Image (cartoon, rainbow, N blue to C red; front, side, top):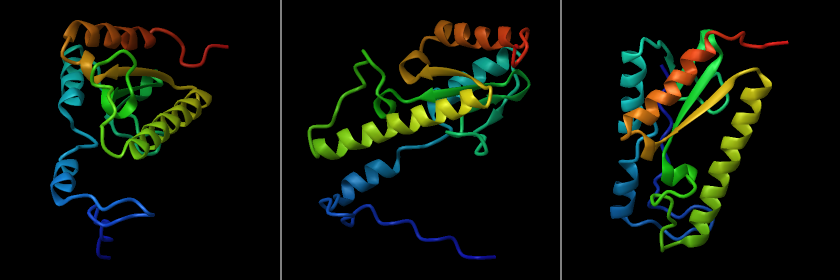
Length: 158
């Protein structure tokens, strides 16, 4: 079995960026990509409603958080900070390294749009639950109810 490739050390400068402090590096290492609290809230609600799904399907563009294959529906649970939820107080730009963050957020949003476009082209319906909505179970339930109703319609009507 081949050894895992080493992950780059974020404390070292990359392509002209200033080095990141060990404290900042440790803080950023705590940011999870999957199994976040908002995702788990949505998954519990979906399961309670009888919805069954697949998690983080990497074969699909954007690796959707929840995939409902029989309904040809994907659901993303987006963090408001990382995916720039409009009109949300969590959508702020850090005061340090502003250019870096603006570029990072622009790249995140562009990547999201490419994934949505590819999914739609393949016939998938896309739903998004924002992190700030996951504490309001009625909003999550309303979105999940829409997904349930998708099962009553043909996946690709002609």
